[in-house]
Amino acid sequence: MNSETPKPLPRSYSRSSATGQNDDQSIYRVSELEEKVRSEEEELLQYSARFFNPESETSDNVYITMRNLKKNVAVETLDLLLIGKTGNGKSATGNSILRSQAFESKPSLVSVTTDVTYEISEWNGAKIKVVDGPGVQDTRMNESEATKDLLAAVAKAITLSPKGYHAFLLVVKYGSRFTKEEIRTVETLKKVFGDLFFRNFFIIIMTHGDKFEEELNTDFNSWLQQQNSKEFEELLSACNNRAVLFDNRTKDEAKRNQQVKNLFDVIQALKEQNCRYCDEHFKTAAASRAALLVEAEKDFIEDEIMNDASFILQRLQLILTDIQCHKSTPFLQDLNERAESLYIKLKQKDKGTGVLSTLSQHVESIINTIRDQIKFSENILKETKLLRQKREEEAKAHAEELKRQREEFNKCYLEGKAQEENRIKLLQEQIEQIAKTKELWSNQDKEMKSKAQKVRQTEQEKLKTVGEKVKKLKNDQIKSTNEKVSKSVFKILKQKIFQKGGNQK
Image (cartoon, rainbow, N blue to C red; front, side, top):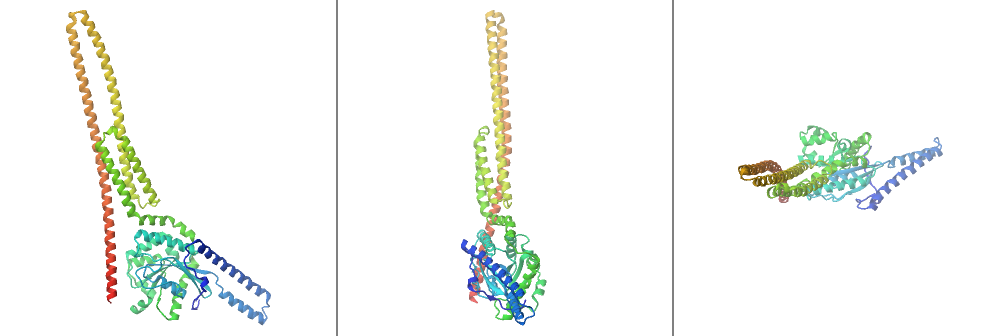
């Protein structure tokens, strides 16, 4: 591949990002037309080879002309997707590849790219299609908004290249520290595109090559091998050590062509090893993207669920304190329905990702506690009914015995005073029997109350344990949120100080 300057195609070949159905249809239409052009030109070449005599000078000229024409025919479009942190020169890199001011580019801490766009140019007879996505880690957005926007932009980028992508270009800036924040961004991209994304399709584009050459007197590949940053080594290893240095500011035409050629050489090696990254690859990573969305909203979900869980626990404590055990079943069943609804809601928000598994376990613990209380209440109610039935049977037996004794007493009374002493004895036995029965019932009541009190104390201790766990989780969540807020405030102050220092200079 020589160093021929890429030629921008006519503006009719350029497309802004598709935001509606008509634009998506036009993308497919362009692809169909390109295929048709290639097919017609192949037929023309075959026809010329058959029609002219190869020994004729005229036919030689025509054949050479047609061969040159075939050489310049765009065999296929090389599809590339630019990804990068705001301020790293992503759009400028796209312009360097296309050799035209196709994308808006200017130094900024806020992303200039607000939508996915693409442009097409030509290089050595091949069409080069570069899709410029929005910057990752956009400082204008919170984590949840940034994640949603990233996923939406990636989905749009996939539709903009129906046949897929030959390579993904991650634009990083020379001279910037590669921190854990960048590693988290890399992990996010893995979740968006899939685990094989980096090793098979990923290329690092390091911008600010002019500063690299000013500060260092070494080869770029040698410099890569000398890096001792754990984070950067992980990134470089993940993409199989594919990296290209770019100077987007240089006016040296030969240098501009050479760096583009270096990139295309790496891409050509990828093409020989892999097929395109297409919609099917994107679909296989759907589960990890769902987990990414849930993770972004985790703090909001936890706060909402924890508030509902705290209300349920407070209501449970009130029921156990103010309502008699054997009468609490209906209230507990209603509370159990609320807890189960909360659990279903939590599972729906988790979307099967497992991101909210810890919170799910706590809600399950609350549900189990309520169910234990329902079971205990039902057992107490059952025992109370059995005791009442037993007392009714005993009372009936006592009444019959009293009736019998009364009849016997009357009989003895009629027989005379001779049996008076026996009657008095019978009455005393009756009184003693009644006293024993009262004592028995009293002991049974005390035993039942003691048993219920012990069980209630046990359940309240369990409830207290669950409440402390939930309270701890909520405090941890509040602490985590405060730390994030503090970090965000510190980051904003740092950026303002940096900007102020830059303005003073």
